Image 1: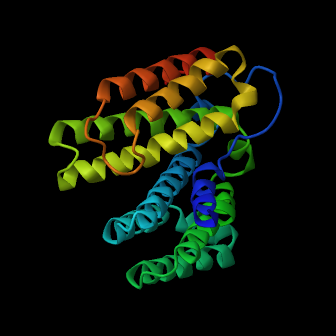
Image 2 (image 1 turned 120 degrees about the vertical axis):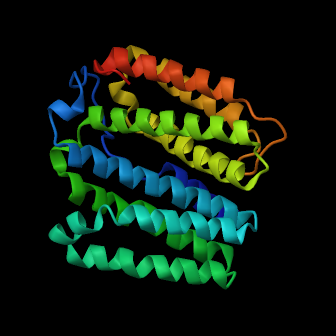
Length: 253
């Protein structure tokens, strides 16, 4: 049970733009308020979280090689943040570069489940929160519009990967990877919707339920590919959430 709790923590922690308040959020595309590098930094960080979460779920299911592949993808994504992080916090940057080889070694050595998922959780949680903030700055980090933008990008990317898995066959090597990527991306999108729930106003249910429906219809067996994929159900849920975000935040999602 402790291992399961650690893995679930991977899905729920982190994310910028969280907080209270019922006032209408800033309107218009966040790119009009913040540099493109800030938006790219949060997106890269959330893609890292997605890969770390998937890696943990695969490790729980004894899929060691697949788990290692997602850790490698997360490490590659950090490459786009390392210079920005190092500029503000060299010690934090060194922690990331030290953590990935340790996790890779743990997976290769079939280390105890809790030891592996706890270390993944540390990277995805405290360390990555700090790295994203360092990479994008406080103004963008605290803007719920940036989080809404990243959330819709993750969801759209997840729907595309899911459709690819359905097209090539979920049990093929390419299909499995696309399905796993979709699982991580849509899990993160759903988590971010809860992080900004106080800013969603009358669109709250449409956003949260749309992403939850996409996740529930697309992943009835979690990270492991089900017998039948439902790309139409996933697309419908994502599109409903995107339309609601556009209404609330005033930018095309």
